[in-house]
Image (cartoon, rainbow, N blue to C red; front, top):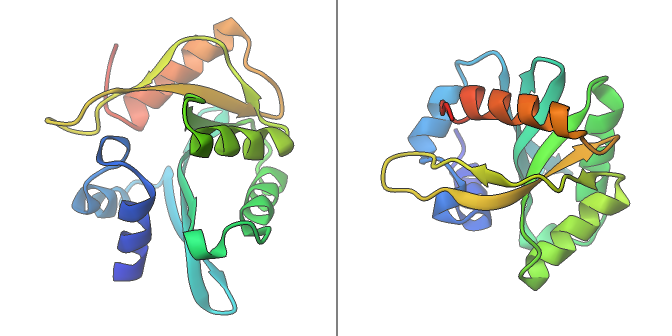
Length: 164
């Protein structure tokens, strides 16, 4: 895979919130997992990874290179994805304790994603990494508590190979 993709991935996500690059490449063998570069005029500007899970799509990573942000690319990518997928879309966001996290949440809220109030932790990606307290957001509707637990368990098992 492209070293520019790796650079965007590693610069966009803290170590505890991403896989090691070789782990990510290994996932390409999994038919539920999709990893796409995002291009504009044949220039790589971002990336998105997502999982087609039972009854929903889980966006694991989504990033637009910082030089290309605030140009509408992220909005267009998410709008295209939600239009093409006929199941709910779920993603994780950091809690709103920093300006960046607040802006990220507001971005998804403008696209009609809703925050779930239930407690959620992203499991550690590997030994030596920490779990991270996050929020789950969903589109087109807020998750009810019963669905939240089912979806959380499916994410834990399939995406993180983690059983709670």
